[in-house]
Length: 309
Image (spheres, rainbow, N blue to C red):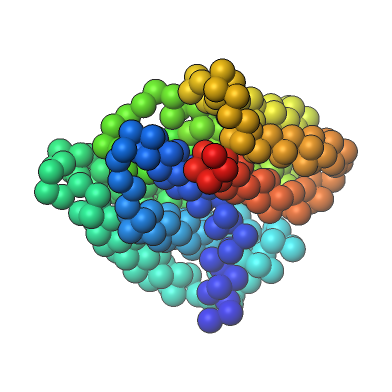
């Protein structure tokens, strides 16, 4: 059981929860402002679904990189990768991926049934399609003949599914509407998620070069990937300020929502430390830190909008 827990890579879970928290609690703030109701059961099921997607993705990545030999050259990383280290066989991991995919789909159907049936049938079928796409994206990063993670498209898919789909989709579950301003927090979470993936790919840039995994970081080179990382980490809080601005918080003088800006200092410190790194392997601790900062950005935004005024 310990090996399966390690393969689930629990440190990635806060990042996956961030988009759901962001979208759900923006919806809560907006619904309460309009006299609407917010269903905690939808929120709980949405959290369960995204956790299942994340574990599915981690197991699929472990399996895909393991059978392709990508992890063979990663000494420290292979020790935490179940298939590459031999602690879990490829067959066992493949079975786990299939079971998790089925379980993820069942949980998705339950969530969408609660959110949309019987009044919103069209939306139900559209979100079923999004759910299937999310499951395929979780598996397709490293699994298959042409995994998109090996073609340098991982950043784009992370931005779409961890950012826009997660934030805007969870918002829609509650409100049954799409609001253009939700693209701002959706983009903020998406960029932070891309920053985590880029750090991962920068760390593994040499082993990926040897294995033929052409990540975006490998394609543009370590130096340019570092510049790209700084841009990704610079924009999210600016986007959150823009979201507060278009919703009138500057004029209303309701400054509680700006509590999320306390993350400016740790973000600046993090960027400084990342820029000082010369050895790619030294980037590993920062993956968890960026994930936690993304989670805190979502939580502080939720508190600022819903509980401090």
